[in-house]
Structure formats: structure tokens, C-alpha cells
Image (tube, rainbow, N blue to C red; front, side, top):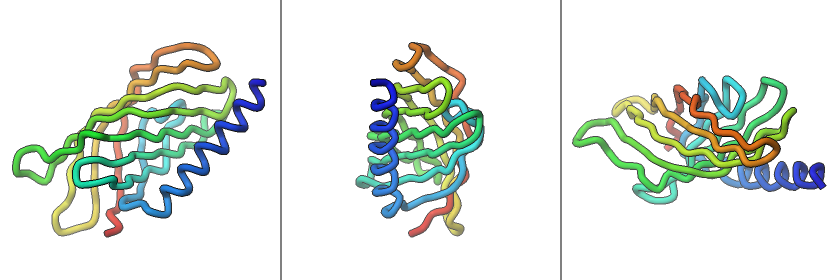
Length: 149
């Protein structure tokens, strides 16, 4: 049963991530704690003016991790080029041990006005439900993304 759950989760997350990847507006890297790994492919998909999906695919550390976070709050900070965002979503780690849970996200980023680069810092606490129930509050990261449009 656990093997079926792992394979089903992998297919679901990778399929959804691949579908969204084709519509990405920003792609880059995330450095820091990413679901048990230290580096991830990072992408953002706009859902509207003030809503987006923030996805990460990480490797290393004995497995692969996938975070797919919805940022329903994505707003400018005053009249600056800075934005802040809050979000949550599923988190999956395919390794030993297998992890399935949820992650939160709070962060701020700077969008260069004359150059298609976005740099941001965020914090992602993880609440892992399967295989062992744990809470990890150490998910700090640096995001560097290229704006595609």
C-alpha cells in the first residue's frame, strides 16, 4: 500500500508540475532548505494579478522533493519594486524516509524594473504527515528567477 501511495503521489505531482511548467512566467533556482534538499528548480505561474503558484523541484539529500504552493496573497509593498507573498500547499519528498505533508510560505522579493530578474527571500515551515509526523520550521531560502514575459 505504501509503495502504491508513493508512486501515485509521484505521478500526480510530476504531472501537475509538468503541466504548469509549460505556462511558467518565471524560472530559476532556490537555495536553502527545500524539503530536505539544498537547491531546487524554482518556477512561478501567475493565476491572476494578485495570485500565483510557486513550484519547486529539488534533488540531492537522498531523494527528490516537490513543493507546489499557492500564493493567494501576492501584493506590492507600497510604491516600490518589492512584493510580499503568503501561501500554502502540498509538499512531497521521494526518498528515505518518504515524506508527504504541507508547507506554508511567507516571503518578499525584488523585481528589477529594467532587467528581467527577481530576487527574493522566504520562509517555509513544513508540517509532514506521512511517513513520520513532524514539524520543520527551518525552511529559509533565497530565490533567483528569470522573468520570461
